[in-house]
Length: 333
Ligand code: GLV
Image 1: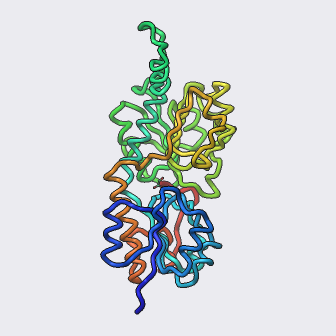
Image 2: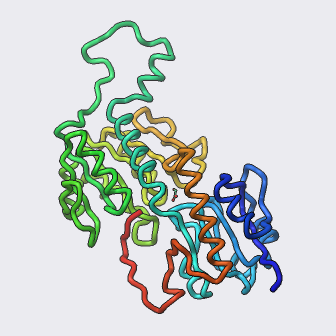
Image 3: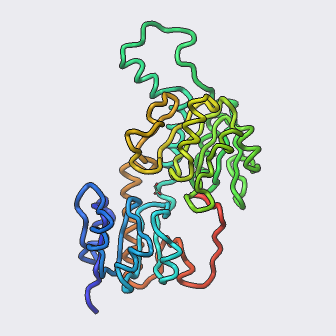
């Protein structure tokens, strides 16, 4: 048997890289910026295995350019919206992802953003560093309370539930909207309108799919409370940024905190950047050393399994192994 060819689209952390290297001799894109589409196709043409990141758009054209020998696509992320999974399934290619290991890090990030937006931490830091702090004042930079408030979680999968678990420690009432998900951590299932009308904090945890594209739009925002804080640590495309800009600028809602944007990076002329009540960070939900190490390991395990003709430990399209498919339409992350 000839040695399988592999392309890894960026340097990934050692645990994953070492595992791949124990088995194979991969080609690796060593630059910090992702390969362009042309570069990716050029370098991945003829490979048996592809390990990619969420910055790589792996659509049917790319798959066809790589060739029919492609046995596995392993994405180092839990979200797989950058991969055309349906096209991979049609071609019989299993697609791997990295669920579970980033749940706590992403839930922590959600809370960090929620607290920062509610207590105006970023704005206060800027205020102080600009030399504007002249005295303690009873009404300086007042924010929103957590205790006794209501948190609405949209998408109640692993990460949504981990957010609910943390909310218990803050004495919050928790509502969630997610088809089929069972109640956990004291959270109550409700329809979307009830969640939006009653929540002081709304946190998004759905994957980006055609059904969830611009789920957060002008109508959605108009149903939120004027004191509400919106947090998105899922995917930028779930939110209509123009509608959010309008809602924040007109104080229709109190604040927003975004870990993700559309596109990424967010262009520096984005109107969201001019708003004091909008915190934006560069897609850092899973950005802890341990979490990224574990993500690389899971991605490598998927790649190695696929190349050995074994079932991927974490496969988003198990229907490639049997005809059964039972994925729901809104889903969770
Ligand atoms: C990060 O956003 C991921 O999907 O893993």
